[in-house]
Length: 366
Image 1 (cartoon, rainbow, N blue to C red):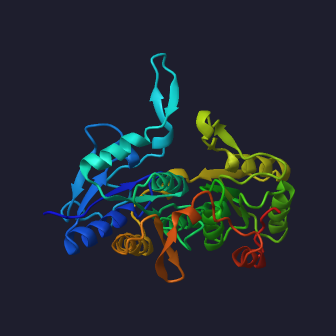
Image 2 (cartoon, helix red, strand yellow):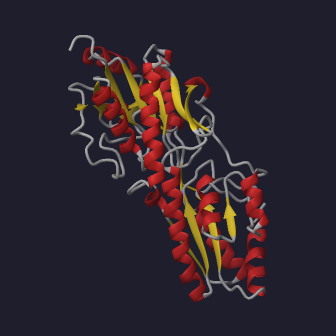
Image 3 (cartoon, rainbow, N blue to C red):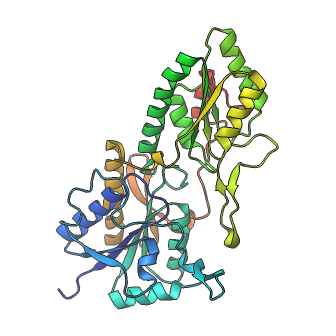
């Protein structure tokens, strides 16, 4: 059909519960109601970086049954920045090359008018760079960490908190049975939203966040006070980015070239080791890791992700390219991508949620 709009959609960064409901909403609104063509791009921007292009036309059949599925039918990666794309050299070394022009040419060849880019802060930064080159983009915020400043909530966060809370619930019984300290390490590199919310919901005794450097002696004092009160077990929730005052974050891998962030690891194990050394109480650690990112999205996240998908289509219809579909209060609104990139939403150490936790007697170590 002449003049039919053709819109691309991709998912970037880590996987997250709710990605498929976003795709489904964009397709059902765009194809079924508006008569557009929706082109799914595989593996984030990578699907447009080499011919033959790895794309698929999405219709109602393509998205049937995906509302409840975790992950993304389009695939994703956090290693495909077109502006710093890793290329293997003849000598086996890798260099980063700007291949953004390849994507621009692919969009021209495929006659894609604009892109719906679903991702976190890194993916939004890439989308913003393309916007500056004249590409029409709409952002949809995705991260279990809930750390995108422009939106009150990101889909995936609720599901991650539910999974983490259930894990803490399960550890309560074994901790109490054996009079142990149970340390639970949760995701959260720079922002401790999952640890804070799951810790409160799971009845944790200690919560350690990246935003509040901790003193291990205060943590151990809390454990000892519980013992003195006849509570012979304790639950300690640790965000992976939590750090002891005066020390760096715990890492297992350097970031390498190109300014990549080092891979975090060991925060929970370190806290468990120190607690056992200082208190001489048997301590165990559980690292939840990618369990928080996988599986079926919660009902809340399915609804929020669906609203974001519909919101993205609405922004296109309004001509508001270069905006992020964001939740403000109870409404989905457009926020310029320029106000999003390079900014994270940190837990406020003096905020009401932290103060509520302190009011329950939860120790933050600082």
